[in-house]
Structures are given as C-alpha cells and as structure tokens.
Image 1: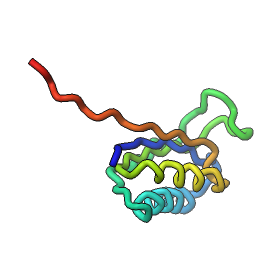
Image 2 (image 1 turned 45 degrees about the horizontal axis):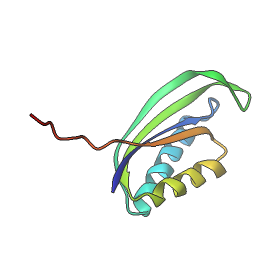
Image 3 (image 1 turned 60 degrees about the vertical axis):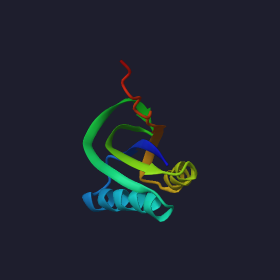
Image 4 (image 1 turned 135 degrees about the horizontal axis):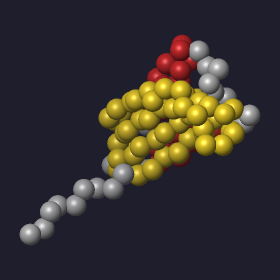
Length: 101
C-alpha cells in the first residue's frame, strides 16, 4: 500500500455539521476500500489564490492515508459528486530512502 495526502476545499458557507459530515465521509471512503486513515487536519478558512465556483475563500482540510491505488480514484469520484467540495488534490507521498554512508 502507498501513502497519500489529499487536500480538499469545502465551500465557505458550509456549517460545522456539514464539515464534520464531509470529513467523516472522506474517511469512510478510505476505510471501506481497504485503506487506513493516518490523520485528518482542519486548516480552517483560507483565502483562495483565485476564484473557484464564485468563491474567494474556502475551508481547507488535509487527510493522510495509506491505501491501494484504486482508492484514490474512488475518493476523487466521491469528491466530484459532492457539492460541498469545490476542489481537491491527491498526491502520493514518496517512500523515505535509507541513508547510505
């Protein structure tokens, strides 16, 4: 399994309850498909570099997880059909190389 990091931006007008529900559903997508959530951080409300769907700011979330490669596609599909998520980006984290002497 590979380690991944996903950052997703939620609409700024979302309620605290909706944010918690979105986070829970994202974690559920990973665990249901054989992955392990390593951490979830709420970065809070941030000003966006450019307007996305007429929003100039959004609530940024970061989730680290370990999962098979197909989970990334399923998570992306989940974010695509969810109205509250206005942008998402997933990257695969590099494996640490052993130090050579």
